[in-house]
Length: 613
Image (cartoon, rainbow, N blue to C red):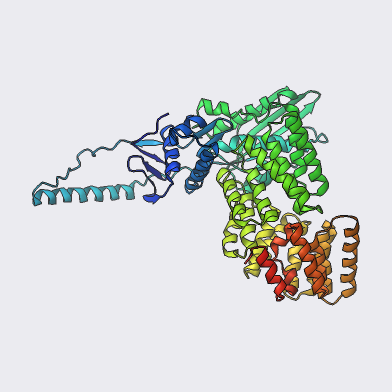
């Protein structure tokens, strides 16, 4: 494949002038590094065509031996740039193991003089130049009039689609891992078609047997909803699916597929193809066939992965360890199953913050699995999110963490969690004004996420916007009244305002719901700070007893010690937390439970050691 040297291509709000090596968006020049520009030239010159990685490397880096990662980085940079257009986030489709396809409709402009337009000759006498100028002004005026009276149609907004969890046809025969897993697989397959497909985390709560799909679609703010039931008996599975238009509640189509369970991939292929044919008609036949790409050909590995992913969402130590066991089972069945490796990485990463386990036991394992997943499939965004949190919570290498979250956003702009990670990272470094837009974007992508709503409330409070913070945390509890993090935050905010009874009530509720050292520490700290030393001493004694038989994060001990006024003991615990790389220590600047220690020079020294200054 040769690199074009001339031509002007337009797509969306962009114009690419190859000869002048210029990219503009709505007439404003967009700067691109040379190799990134050349990559875009190759893609736009061959819209809809699968460009093999080897061909792209040869065209963009002719005569040079370069690593495939150079191309990956160029594609990531392009995705960030093209995402400035509302439709651009999905214009570059990754075909795992092969290459990339440019999905944007591209027009090539042939430079020519408009019919009847004057040609201005610099050698003409002044009167001729004047007439030509008058003619040019008239043409410009005519063009403005036409734009005013016949405005160009706005670019079509990508259709937003929700794939709801599949529901059992017969009540009492639920298989949650299968019901959620098939939905997630379809979401993944359709994400590269130009449709705005909501992630599983946004739709998983709509799994009720009597769920009204149109109501779910309204709440999710989508145009169409895929509603499906499944029935499994013996070695067979039957799936009935229908695509419902949210505006009028009408079913655009329905399909029923009956296959052996070992042919589950065929069922998914049929449904994905029907959705794409009806909502993304611009796709070619070859693109539709590629919807059938399978990350594993082992149905047993696939089922182990689905079950592992189901347990991953529970975020308890027992469920996370179960998910690791299942992901590793999938890897034994198919060592090249990239998503299973990514699942192991994410499970270990979550263990490091959601359970009582030594950071050194989990974060290095998470990193190894994330890197292996990317070796197998560089197009995956999830391993970059895991690596971002590892750099954030364990390595304390802030710039590298930010870069990983950025790579995840470039690969999957519709995922909320890289924005959540970047928002948390910025906030913990004291950059609240920059963090809040990231949190807003994360919430826009997943409006019902409990952790996103709660974290946004925390950062609003840190910015002094207490009323907004209270409304946001109340919104979280409206969604799920038993979310302990929201109760902890409301208790912390009440304590800061001197509302003693409300603070103790909320923190007690958080501990009753979670029963973790961190919730006990928050309650014990508040009790001691408000004058109930006996309860504070009791909480500290319980934590010390737990620490004698297992791991207790040193930050938990330090909080109660600080509340009791045992400053030296609190700093000794913080030193241990620093040595152990306790991820909770990264919230040092935000967490109000450290307020008693902030004036001490040792606190400033700790901030400096963590590069938080």
